[in-house]
Image (cartoon, rainbow, N blue to C red; front, side, top):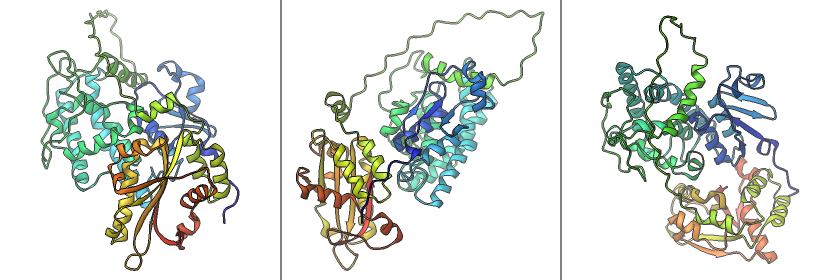
Amino acid sequence: TIVSLCRASPETTMALTLYTYPANYRAFKILIAAEYNGLDIEVPKFEMMKDNQSPEFLAMSPLGKVPVLKTPQGALFESNAIARYVARMRRDTELYGATFFESGQVDSWIDFCSHELELAATMWLYPVIGYMPYNAAATAKSKNDVTVALTTLENYLSDKTYLVGHKITLADITVASALVYPMKLLFSPEFRAPFPNVMRWFNTCVNQPQFTAVIGEVVLAAAETLPPNGTAVAAAAPAAAAAPAGKKGKGQAPTKGGGKGKPSPEEIAKMKAEAAERKKNAPPKEKKPDQPKKKKEKAAAPAAAPAPKKEVHPLKALDNDAPSTMVGDVWKKVYSNCKGDYEGCMKEFWEMYDPAGWSIHTCRFKYNEENEQAFMTANATGGFVQRSGEIRKWLFGVMYVTGTEGTTPLEISGCYMIRGQDMEPLQVANDDTAVYHWNKVDTTTPEGKAHVAHMWCYDIEKWNSGEPIFLEGKAVNDVKQFK
């Protein structure tokens, strides 16, 4: 039985503000998690050594460190704590794992990143950006520690697409975020070669639209960036060397200075902001009165190469050229928070639905006779949903597997709403659309509206408790939502 609509919970609608300096890699995981969860987080202009020393800020972060997240309930500090908070704000996206055990796995990889990877990588990076004096022995130790951490990841990912489960979680977001600057500045092609599984996983992550919305395009280092007056230091070979990585970063621009792959002055300046934050808490050095300071001549910094112009996604262009009165994320929040009250939920949907800007289509698998095992058929729908992530902002739907293994045919069907009037954007993003019959629903008729409600609105309480539910008179074996 379907009754009135439940409004969105306050956790998904409240105002959030993140205080951090630009390009802080510790903020990447927070903002990427927010992209996956459809959360708006305001990031105001923030000046280190000034704003973080105000009494108001110190009341939120006792040590004056960033990032800090301000919420209506109070402030949170420490980047991992903030990332966990943001990831947990929507359970349906499963960023923190689909089960209690998977949540523990996510925590394991977050801790691994902090202690085994991130610390070693920053000790290698800091001399490059001028925060720490260069020491050959310390750099060699850092490289070896990074190699050990990457070897651990390489072996683990040999038969896995993601770190936890079968979709991106906060574990992938956290570890990939920590590797962004090392991949861009430190890891040469020769260093990356023994880690093809890591590179496949990393490229998969950072090319997701939720990642690129925060970090942009990640251009892999053409060569290791060396610290001032430093020389290349070899790291110990990984325990089990693998074949070279199969992909290189796209759009690698030639660098000045003999092809040594030096970062742009702007990028180094942004990373030095983090160094400034740490340096302010360091004990002051004793001054020697008889040794006046010498002024150092700074060489003129080379001009940064202009960034290549990004191609606008066709659906983004459609948003710009023909804006719709309906916002897909608003509907997704209403649907996610209705708690089974689908009658009011669908009533609100038809009030906001814009048939000129959106369309609804049903899909049915062409080869249902080949579906023999329930778990494999369910995996097929899971793969379809995962491969549709490129246009998540402009797509919503529910997919079913109906039937009983060994008794009645296993059939795949679904119902999707997409921006625009046809399924072409999904066909471009996901090749699996070719194995489905697609039919546009006439939403001007009561029958069409009733069919959409039937496809989208199932008794989630019964499903979660293990009671049977039915679609078109057939027992439902599996159901997946795409939001």
